[in-house]
Image (tube, rainbow, N blue to C red):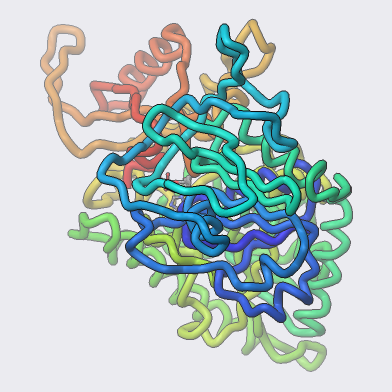
Length: 533
Ligand code: XMP
């Protein structure tokens, strides 16, 4: 297995993802774990991540000495390259010039890491790589034993290697998809250089996960907030597989769900899986609390808080209802928190990155709830969660459904949330999704729903003038958002066919009274985020 030491980069988890895509097991731990921890972990290789600090001088985090004593290959990425340089006797210099975004890196010499990995070749025969760089500082002197592996015009040492010891470092980020050969590079490192076997599979994970849930929970009862999204659905199916009727799903309708979602969720879980599901209509409570509130973080916090309240009430009821055969009420709160949620909320143990959005399904809940937290998907990436769902026998359509955020339409209605807005948005969104599913791309034979990772409508509480028949209209605007991404950390807006956009727009304007203008969002992440709030 591979050990990834996290220095706090926003994209550290992507390193883990790429490694697991190569079917190699890996774990992320903070950069300051003890030497003893590293010896016990017995890694076959170690990767040092980047850092959120823009310059090297902002902090002085170092890799534990055991990394260098372990005798295994080490790959330093961005900040990881700096710390490797300093710890092994090279030099780093603060730079005024900041490289951010695309760069072309030229490979030097022949290294086991880069040999044959290139996007194209210069007429002189140099291998060139298209990469994504994000850094301020530079390595100015190689540590003893190292040779130059890669360079760019503004960064003469963009990669270095000490092949005798198996030490490699790159200034760019191989873990992000913008680095075209990044995956090949990381695969080369873990498979060839570290000698790991490609043997990590989802089926083994199901067995382990089921076993772990049984051990954790024993005979106690669990409640789970089922939202209808992929994550909580897969969590529910997994926990149901492990402990059956000890699990009660609480499906909270906060009034911010998609069209007909409630019905579909009940059919699947109560109807087909025979799980215990309590359906709570709390829409009046949620909308009441949200009245007059327009700040996105405040809205997220309110929705999170109301969830806690509803669960507390349900937990209390489930406890009271506990008969002689019962273990005396729910002791656990299960959540479909996945790894990207953990990272983006700044809640991970290993976490040093800054908070972007406070996801309402992570952090701070168990203290106020008086319930222990069960998060069986906490280490998994989205596509791994889907694979797991398939492994558990959930229908393909449900598992490959686009993700839906916990706060639901609450973050897709900009500013103040009103029931009227939610009703309009639900209908517009349903039309968009219906057309995406119905429109097949001839080149791939796939629907545009499958060709996009997430698509939805956003309600803009501004009015614009339109004309319908002979009359003037003065109605609201809806923005369509469709993105393609493999990790939800970076995303491109989808180039939907104009014909599809045209049909969706005309259907929404004609069928949803109250909306007279439809726009398409052409912003990528970063710098925009996928959701508008
Ligand atoms: P952003 O907008 O940060 O979204 O680019 C990345 C992914 O996360 C989802 N998202 C959430 N999921 N609770 C969730 O469970 C939340 O509070 C939340 N906020 C955003 C978003 O839909 C996208 O898939």
